Amino acid sequence: MKARLRTKMWWPRYEKDAENLVKSCKGCTLVSVPYLPNPLKRFSRLENPATKTADNGKQFCSTEFKRFCTARNIVLFNTIPYWPQQNGEVERQNRDILKRLKISQAEKGHWREGLEEYLVMYNSTPHSVSGKSPAELFFKRQFRDKIPMVADINRQLENPDVRDRDKQKKQLEKEYTDKKRKAKECEIQPGDGVYLKILMKTKN
Image 1: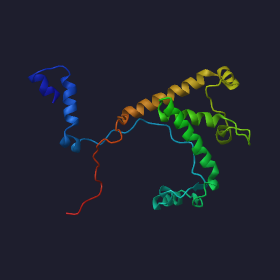
Image 2 (image 1 turned 180 degrees about the vertical axis):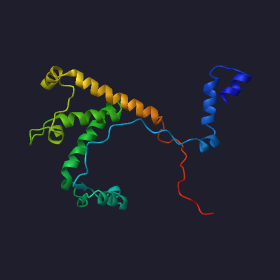
Image 3 (image 1 turned 60 degrees about the horizontal axis):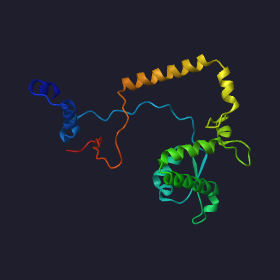
Image 4 (image 1 turned 90 degrees about the vertical axis):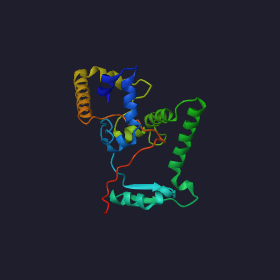
């Protein structure tokens, strides 16, 4: 289309207008290639828990969730209805999260950024009973936050070339994989209309 336009006429931003026209064409969308994959991200380090305690919300009592737990060998425990004290740790965590969200709203900040800051703070704070932070108990190391620590100085004394080469190598691998897969950040927003590809064979 762009080549045809070049032989006919020209106007400012005509290439962008042509792209927008194709993107808004229903027929072009239906026959186009599927949406490009998201850029590569490093795989999770966490494993499936042995047990899971949940309240009696519909999402936790559904057949799909029970099947999910069974497939991953997770023993599911449901709390007694109207007795939140049975799952007191989660209730306390929810209360702290709500406080952080209220602070973000009052300061006109983004709730997701506020929640991420809260998680960093929580994982870096020693527990009153164990004396260790969740990061130390779970990952066997301390998380870095805004407060400097002695370990930062020790890291600087270590061989920085090894860390730099490792980081550079991983970044090059990511860029190569993303380019090969033609990865692109998803631009779909809540409320956007999308087309779903039907993978089931229909009977004639």
